[in-house]
Length: 165
Image (cartoon, rainbow, N blue to C red; front, side):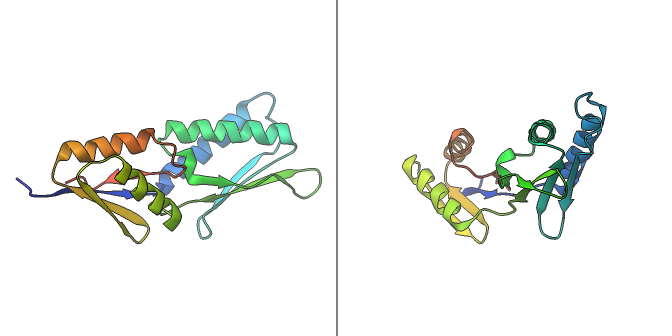
């Protein structure tokens, strides 16, 4: 039996699942009566981790974003991983909205998560390792409690739990 148990908290997006969600959302947008001829596009730039939604007007952009979010949820991709900017004018009368896909936990969010774990008063230790966190403790129940509390928390960061040992 292990003396110490641990798990990692990371923020990673499965790019294949993201691509599938984009394709399914575009297919649904193409089939919807009110969005059929809107020439709405959803593109993901892999090099910059930037997602771009573009449509004819604000209503169609919002509807397309909602459809995309629904497909993300179906694919178990956290919406918190996308940081959307304000909609902006594109060429002609079109409107565009960009989102940065967050890969890795930012330093300030990592500190917030560590502080949250300390408030739970469990006998565990959390340490920041680059863009992830490692939580160690003697009892598996304490670690499972931390995972459950983090899932229920209001911390605005996409979190995935892996390497539970």
